[in-house]
Length: 332
Image (cartoon, rainbow, N blue to C red; front, side, top):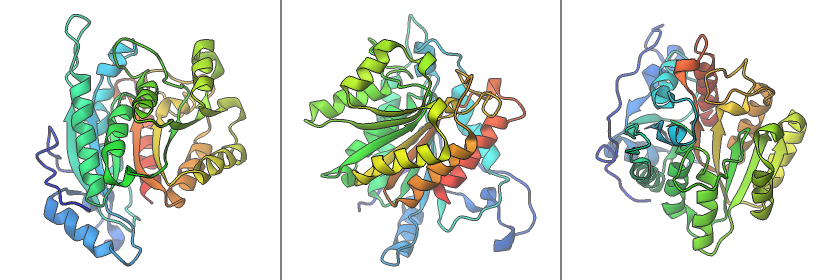
């Protein structure tokens, strides 16, 4: 593990968290009372406290404030406000985790236009560098997107980390879409084709699996590309708890490590209305939670992210609350 000076890598430092106050004793603790701003010394101390005793690695949340990929993909923008919304939904939750949790602040991608695109690529590189540094310092990282362009930023971090060297790393996507579009510019619809090409440039194949694919929302060309790349997928209409868990177990069996990415549009629109592309069918939340628990329990999870929350279209903060519950499940 290497030492890291994290504050210099985030564009915006973490803000104070807030939530209900029931007391300061451990049994009253909520997320807002547990999360601390990350520092090199605090992280080193937390990592050292778990070294050798099998304790859970400290976790670090990273915001990725980006709408540029959604804009380029002709979606409805608003996901840049998601990191704040997820933190606000997490803050009041009871804290049952047996690990330290830190906040590293946000990487910010300015929203551009067709005439002057925002620097999505630079933002992805900065976020990837932060993820890699924190992974190499011994943390479990969780990125709060942002559109699903967040995924390529996450991939850059995992691929550049020391733990990926010589390991068979897979990407498990919970999503209604393959996001394998072949476009001139990167967007929220291209990240997994970008990953596949980056892996091919290194002489490797991308180990990529998706739970929740919607047949009507992916063209025949995308299905053919998925088949050409050897992508494993489970359609939303066949995703029960039993089929999804078996699918994930089979995928994990051949891996040393896994990066989990969750696009909230995998869920039914009634559960997750605040996304760029609400689902007509979707995978039930209890199935998604069961899959997340299975991945977390595998001991192979190195990084996770949650993407596509759009607070501007949310109803009663339903989608933000679901995102918060999933973060809690990932780290629980």
